[in-house]
Length: 232
Image 1 (cartoon, one colour):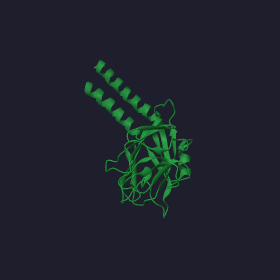
Image 2: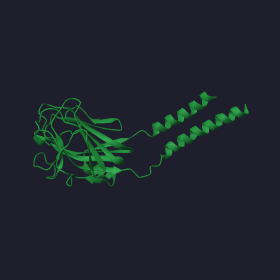
Image 3: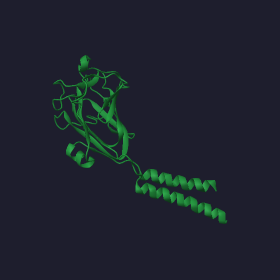
């Protein structure tokens, strides 16, 4: 009896889990990202305190906290908020690390940077500028990696371009993303991120109809097994 009940419930949960698997689309064009993401919040770092971050400390921004840590592949230069002319995206303050950043030597590896959102989020994107074509980065969300150690990684080059946009939209809410360098060619030139965009999830999320239907079928199956055993 218990075996049949367990099988019925396990099957319904497995089907529900499969139906709810995340679908994540990536974008290299801001207009296409905006059309898919809808209304987004924006953090441009212009009102942020300038200076170098301390590793392991969470820094508050509008809608998320940001924590930097040393890359497990090796140490590297500092990371923080800067508004000098080097590696600028739109001539304003931005998140930056790399060659001579905050007085540190540019050799070594770029840091790991984790964005942790104040509320579940469906979309995330940012402008980027990377002056070293040998650098490669990856971004991890919901256990899925984007980019990697191939040339350009997360930020592929288009001709001689050293800047662009990266964004993703998920049908499943996520609470954090992790960005890290995974390949390098020697000196770590400046890397900048600016104009971070994200879409908070609704305050009260409702389970998807498909998931509810599958769970209901599982419960109905449990009821049928019980009734059959009572009449046997």
